Image (cartoon, rainbow, N blue to C red; front, side):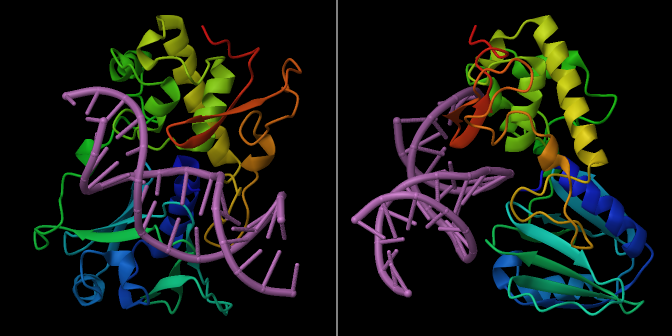
Amino acid sequence: MPELPEVETVRRQLEDVVVGRTITRLTIHDPLLVTPASPAAVRAAVVGRRVTALGRRGKYLQLALDSGDTVVAHLRMTGRLHHSGGRPVPPDRHRRARIGLDDGTTVDFSDTRRFGRLWVLGPDHPDIRDDWSAKLGVEPLTPQFTPEVLGDALRGRATTIKAALLDQRRVAGIGNIYADESLFQAGIHPHRPAGSLDADEIRALRDAIVDRLQVGIAQGGASIDRYRDTLGRRGTMQDMLRAHLHEGDPCPVCGTTIVKTRVAQRGTYHCPSCQPAS
DNA sequence: ATTTTCCCCTGCCGGC
DNA sequence: TGCCGGCAGGGGAAAA
């Protein structure tokens, strides 16, 4: 499940091979990928355009085109982007689209569960909302992500801190893996009301989020389910998880058995001793 | 307005 | 062996 570190890993790899290239072909095998737009409209907006930059906002990838439009992609649960690098690409029955570049290479959007989406945003596409980025919260790996900003995002919230971290309007890019790992590192119980954290806890949580996301990027992401990088390689962050998916295992810090609960419809893992309920 | 629940999808896994 | 229910979850819509 690609979260910020996984998307950032893909962004950095794609940046090297896509920026400056012109898109010569776009084949959409699964129209659901571009819903509600039509494959023909997306193809018309993209083919013949040069890619000028590759950005990221939260878990979204942004492909800037020389037309002024932006292609926005979200991998959701099982989406992958694979760059051919000029080598033969093995058959993939989950391929949803193929982008052809002017150097003869291809970028394939593959997605087993078909939750992934791709949009074209720009002045010529008024049917698609252009304010998506404004709805997202602060970018956690920027200087703007201070304890004060995190505190403001959590103040007065009655929902659990875990649910608040998963809410992309608070902080952008955190998913189930890094929410669990950040709360573990900060020693905060996932069921705590978001608004009940004191200043020390907020500072610890901010530091833990930044640290876990940075380590995640350094490890090339977590390949828990189907995540792979643009060359099909696994990341190694899954080997460094201390609470997430570790139900029944001893806590690596104190030895207490890791517990699994459910928060916001998501499996949630914590250490009852290191992360006290109050 | 905030918070929770449901739903989209497919593959996998345990139970019978 | 094969069928079936349950589970996994990001995010948006709908409901509470």
